[in-house]
Length: 429
Image (cartoon, rainbow, N blue to C red; front, side, top):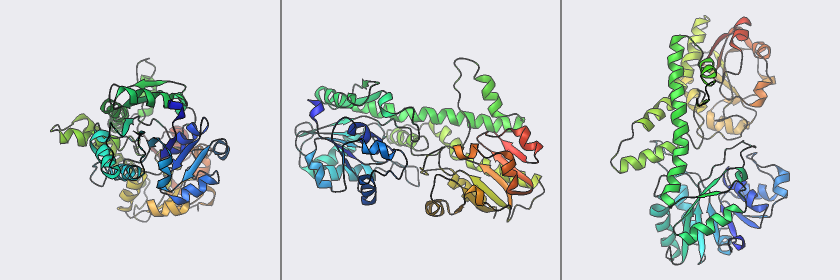
């Protein structure tokens, strides 16, 4: 029976840990990660990512381990490792391959290996299966089976949790598909969708994020146009969204481990097959370069306010790729900072969700709590609308600034009329 399967989650990051917790509420589960520090923290019921509360961890039956040999005691192995891109926007399947090697060396006959990481169609069967066979000396289809069930976790989202999102499942044959479906149905009350094959499931996941990327790319391009027209993109969207079938996307910087990455996986596969995607790459190009427009807004604002750009002091509010999470991966704030440094401005940051050491290492700027910011700021850029920033008034922002301050509010958090009445040179989308 599927419910008797001994489950192991490989990779306890933003996807794997919530998944392990969901299973751990129902049955005994093993959580494996190569990060020994993380394993020790989880054994103390502490999640440094902030995705799972201590009380939730205490209510689960999870055995945490960094010893790959423990995988041998399980027979339903779910792989939830990152699938990043390299400096040339090519898929980096190193985590998938290394995870497959580790699993293969400790793979018991009769096991099912299910991959959740976002990939292009074909990775499970054409990349991972050969690795599993090579390092296990077992034959896929005879000695073990594989499946694919794409993750749909939204970091920081406490409403759309694993159990409430329909789970796509697939397997290499009907028997495997049914077992995979049965296992996931124990934790997903919303139900499962059985894809006809593994490649279809892989493709379904990657286009979910491509669709969002293109929609955001469209509204970003509109924002660039409306800047020139002299109207607010947020006002335009608000008006247009009164029609029932208008999709309400907002402009801004696109980062993170999904939307800013996954389209490149399908682009890579398409080009490998001799087709050059045009719409997908156009959307990526717009989104990848929006930080330049943000930098231009603050620089123009400084000039308009009669300030010297060189050595002016800029405060960036929020560095994570989205609000209320501790995840800085692929945050476009990094490119924004690099762009601004070319103008020789002095940059400080404020992000209550990130520790100071990480900010200095990843973004090369000092992270200062808002209450400790000196009153010498020339310009402010709101990048990430953390809840903490929603509690900071325009008057409080004004207090940390010198005369004629500039405010670039790319999230549209503040009222532009009030900002201008207070003396801000205000810009937004």
